[in-house]
Amino acid sequence: MNIRKLLVLSALGAAAAGANAAGPVVTSGFTNGGTVPVCDDCYTDITPLGFTANFFGTSFTGAYVSNNGYVTFNQGQGTYTPTGLTASYVGQPIIAPFFADVDTRGANAGSVTYGTGTYAGQDAFAVTWNAVGYYASQSDKLNTFQLILVDESSIAAGDFDIYFNYDQVQWETGSASGGVNGFGGVSAAAGYSNGTGVDGTFGQLAGSLVNGALLDGGPDSLTANTNDGVTGQYLFEVRSGTVIVPPPPVSSIPEPSSYALLLLGMGLLGVVARRRKQ
Image (cartoon, rainbow, N blue to C red; front, top):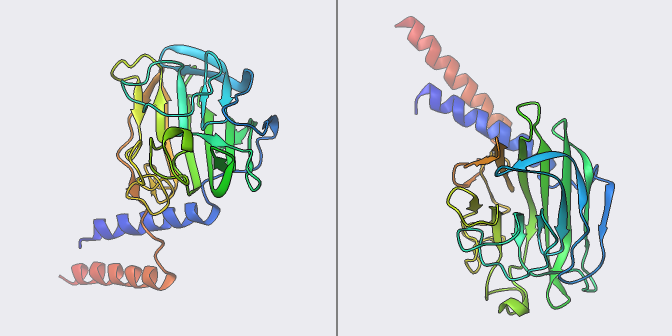
């Protein structure tokens, strides 16, 4: 392995270590909002984002938070069985970290909260589905995930970033979508769409609608993969109204030990010393 590859691996390992220390899901700091009532298939009235988001040519200043793992923009939506977030989805403009049949009526289920705040030093709007169960009123398995929309108008008016954060994904389907004990049937989808089905206006994470794929331990586990180097986090940059397509999700590189980094540094110094002697 050459010096450049060793340096790249060391830097990626250090970045992953710093990200994993804090975890991707931010559960505080977005208090200027509210809580979705305990329910099944409900959604909020329009709620302010705190900034203007240009999503495929239309500017929005507010969104509707759905219990079922997504936000929409023109009006609220309670749809619980995903049709996918590709050309097959036609309807409300939608951003969905986990489009599935969320049900918070279970005895051990948590809640869905939303609000404005800051993220990475920028104004932001976040929705957190914290320890939520599945239909019908089941809470033996719980999911925790989050959507953060971050104002990037300092780049250009209407620009923003979309973050999907995942902490725990134990179920994928409600029984009304054909699932049994949270598994099978029409499984969850994750992605975004402007609702027209036109090429270039939608995107869907690998493993969506595939039984078992997005679950913890699954082949496309949302909590174990990433597209930006932070385990359990997926970033989509929206510039001039268009989502910049990110690379496919990849597993984060584990943190190297201090001893390994020391050996790496010694090895690099040795290589440099030998080259100077030559």
